Amino acid sequence: QVQLVETGGGLVQPGGSLTLSCTASGSGTSFRFSTMGWYRQPPGKQREPVASITRNGTRTYLDSVKGRFTSSRDNADAKISVHLQMNGLKAEDTAVYYCYSGARTPTWGQGTQVTVSS
Image 1 (cartoon, rainbow, N blue to C red):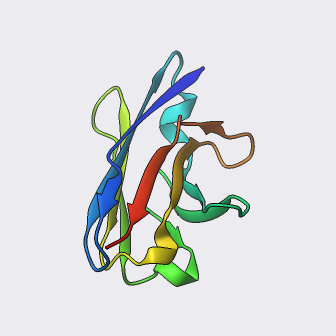
Image 2: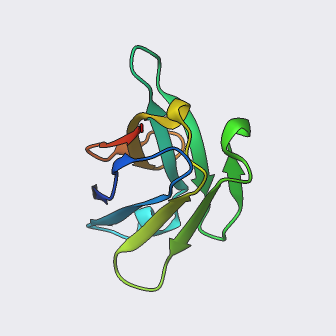
């Protein structure tokens, strides 16, 4: 069983930057090999995938964040960490961001609010 803890998020002005982090820990070792990533849920909208990263570093991104968001992953420790560096933030990036582990049957983090507003 894997547990995910998210940090980061907050209020930022348009054009600003934020970094989200997510640390996975738990029993067993399978989670260390799982794809991890981020979804977001804007106000009044459905949850959408934002970025993913495999254990080997293969990345995918939502089209609207390509060139602005960068995901990274640290497999070195007993706990696996993923990060989402968000630059050039726009109002439409405002959402609750959820970290996940496991592409097929994901485990979710608690969610963190990102608000882009002047």
